[in-house]
Image (cartoon, rainbow, N blue to C red; front, top):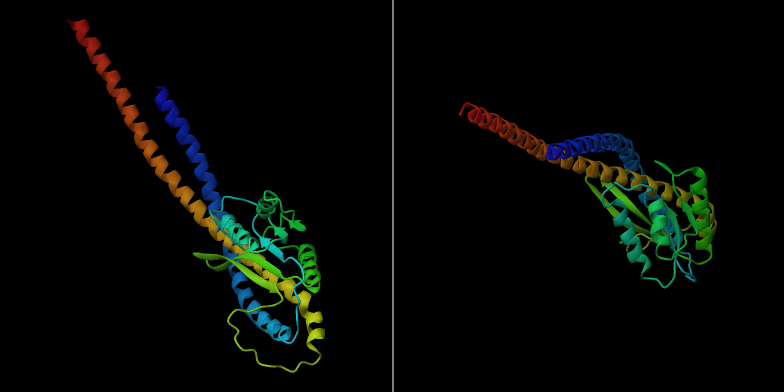
Length: 271
């Protein structure tokens, strides 16, 4: 009987866990629908904004004179598969190329990751939910622009959302603006001067780029969590099926044993 009681307890626990994973799957699926629309809309803006910024930056000289600044975007919570591991591993690989770096973290997972490696973030943010607050965006973008003006490069590490099935951790050189594969740059005549243009649009570019990177990261987090909870729910179903079969086998064995004992007792009584 103790075996059946143990199986019942396990069945009850797994059923409760399945309710939780099923609910989390539904919530993440609903969040993903809205997040992926915002992520797709940002793609066109960033490509065009980056193209313009690269053209403005071309005639300007940026002398690198200090350790780079990395802005790393992860999540506050786990239960999202390899989402945090992927972006933090990429950030670590990039950071290891330099002797010294400074970091700004978004998400508790990123903050704890760097603190555990002896790197104290210049700024740290968490509890942002689906969007970075205007205050956080303003602080990060102003700090990034300030460091750029102090002759430092600024990188952003985030997770790019392509579709619900494909997400990829990426590192982007945010400042000075840089576009891979741009080739030979055409010369442009600017009015006002490139310096004045850069000064007027720099914070706008950084602010909106970071907003988009966070949107992509949030959509990617939900996609990872949908898959993780779907797998967890399927595993719970498999366990329930196996335990239910085991429960019925144990119950059948007990009933068979009791019937055998009754029959044996009756035969002994008759003889």
